[in-house]
Image 1 (tube, rainbow, N blue to C red):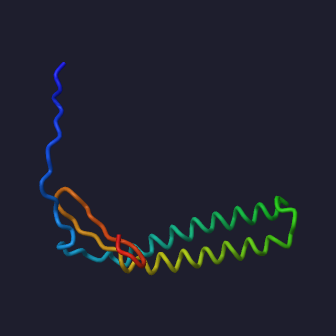
Image 2: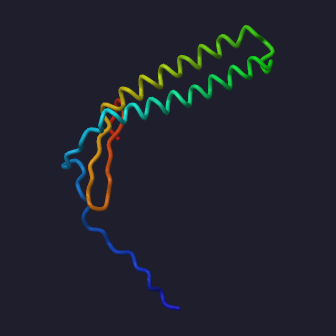
Image 3: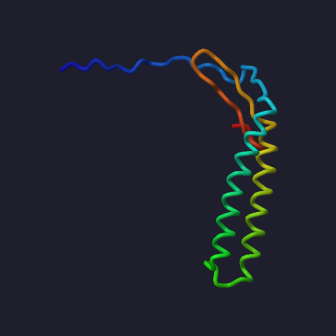
Length: 106
């Protein structure tokens, strides 16, 4: 059997820095926020069910669990909102490059 596969040497790559990226429509922020709300609603519901059914033996610690989950929820909301402002995209023939990140561009 002969080998018909050969790697083609790539000599040039497109320069993404020179491309003008477009900002994402603000309506997509609603989609991101709905997703975050649904995830944390499920987490709060699971925590409430575990607390109500008596999974946690020490009742004093459940308040801290609710508080920690709420603070994580607020942090995720803030990071998603800040990061959305930096999200950009560009449509080309064969690729779909994107940029995202809160403090660093990726």
